[in-house]
Image 1 (cartoon, helix red, strand yellow):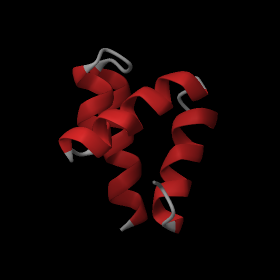
Image 2 (cartoon, one colour):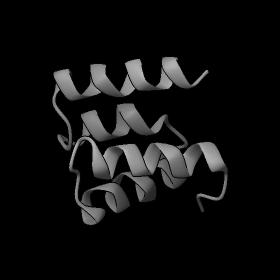
Image 3 (cartoon, helix red, strand yellow):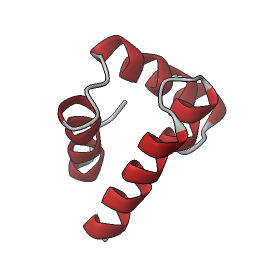
Image 4 (cartoon, rainbow, N blue to C red):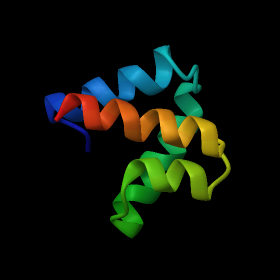
Length: 65
């Protein structure tokens, strides 16, 4: 379950900036629990984001650290 503030910020970015649906985000979160993989890579692996969006996610994550 997502509870950390950094996770919530990422989810808000995905929803608001990349306009991913709640359903798409939920799919990736379910797979993250099963596979314990990084959320951005799971989003890309399941075709929920393209390479440009994946790069935007990584850029955003780098800015947050």
